[in-house]
Length: 395
Image: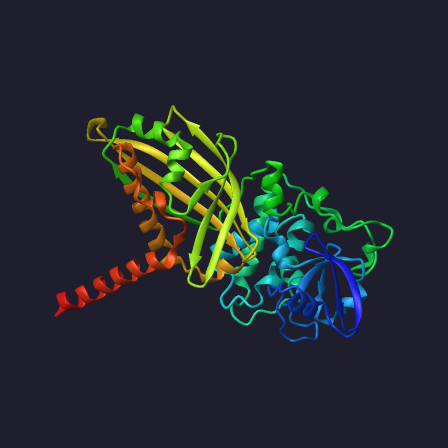
């Protein structure tokens, strides 16, 4: 056994391992970073691709001991990365993944292409991804996803970086010597972990991977509802599992939300900023949070607009809910179930909001955590009722 010291996802690591231990086995078995997948274990399929001093490398054929002093970034370390966030949304939009086994390595390689290529040249993208094999998709959606991100970034005048921002010549990992540690910050591509971003006060904009539209009505005038939305503490009291850590300000709201998914319990700590437009009775809430226990991170955006009903006696609240969830908790979400859960949660929020505006105590005020399984059971019962109702009606 030998002691190996390196940096993994911006964290100093010093652990013992056999000299023959691969970097892939090291991050999976020693650090529980199982987003790095093992496929062929011969450096052919690309599922194990990670960043070694900022350069994509095959971790299954790289000895961990050979990475002494290097900086390693796995797919988990790119949770808050600007380019990877855009790629995740594009992969979802273009149906660029099915089983998902190749996806972590594919994203790492695609990110390198987005940084380097001057334009969305299909041939160069296919050549650049030729070292990442996918048995499911036929690559068409993957290529389209990468093209769309390159096109969008170039349209925003984000210029390509020469050699992907690399400053050291040589093989992957050679940048760990006197040239200094690999730091992606100058390239403005990898953000600090969400908890660090929150501590610094940075709540970034982002492109949501999933967007859900919801609508509900309240028997109160739009002006009264808009004023209520300015009561951040009151709104938080209407949301199950939400608690504030300090007096809220529009530019910064710090708090947490407790979520329980069966045996998985998570407590997302984070912050948000609130934007309001009185002229259009609309607003936007942007937040970011992390749960260290499940190694999950989330970014969320809620856009709302208030419309008068019944001559101004009532209000229609239109919501656009966008979010990106990464880590363990992202594996339990399915689009259909998430839509049903969102519908139920919005209904509960609307009911609590109505009660509070009517001078009553919201029913969720004493609820310590948000239990998705209790809500999911109600959703499942409703679905079964619809199915059997349709069958009995057909008979």
